[in-house]
Amino acid sequence: MNTHEAHVTQRISGEECATRGIDFDFTTETRDRAAALRDATAAAAAARGVEPSELALRIFDETPLDDSGSVVVRVYRDPEDDHLDLRNLMVPRLTRALGDRGLVAALREVSGAGDGELIVTMALPDDRLSDCLAQIADGAAVVFAMLDNGRVRWRVFTDEPGAPTVASLDLTPAHPLGELVRVTARAEDGRGLLAVSGR
Image (cartoon, rainbow, N blue to C red; front, top):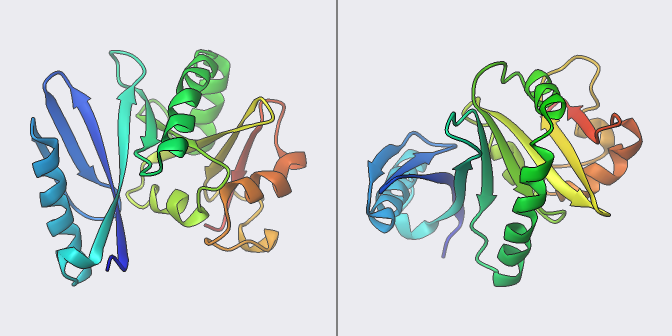
């Protein structure tokens, strides 16, 4: 039984695939994506002191928006087909939104990405906050984008002073992202962007 989770990304570049642990130390580049995931499972299990059979990987596919690779779209490889289809359908909408340079500049500022890599995770309302929080475990600049009533809502977990905290909103990591978006909707800016602190 899989009683532990770990988070990993796979990014295709030509014929190579870079596989990287998000909340554990692991990096490899190979054409054999399945072998990379087996090695990642072993590494994550060792880091947590459990057997590989006790660990489940949550896998995210990453795609750079352009050749510069400065903005990367991350999508959870959802085992539920209908959810995966929904995620994939949202990617073009998210990509169009990220064509707004002013928006990207604002996301970079709030997330602390600066001129570095900005990762934008395409999220669904029922994605757990714990899975969102796990994606910032390695210190990467990650923004979460969720489609809500035809509009993209953006949430960033940061230590920005004055930002509402998860605890102050009476939420826990077990709550869904959609609930966080709902209770903070009035506090977001005109772009639908809000930073949340106290992660």
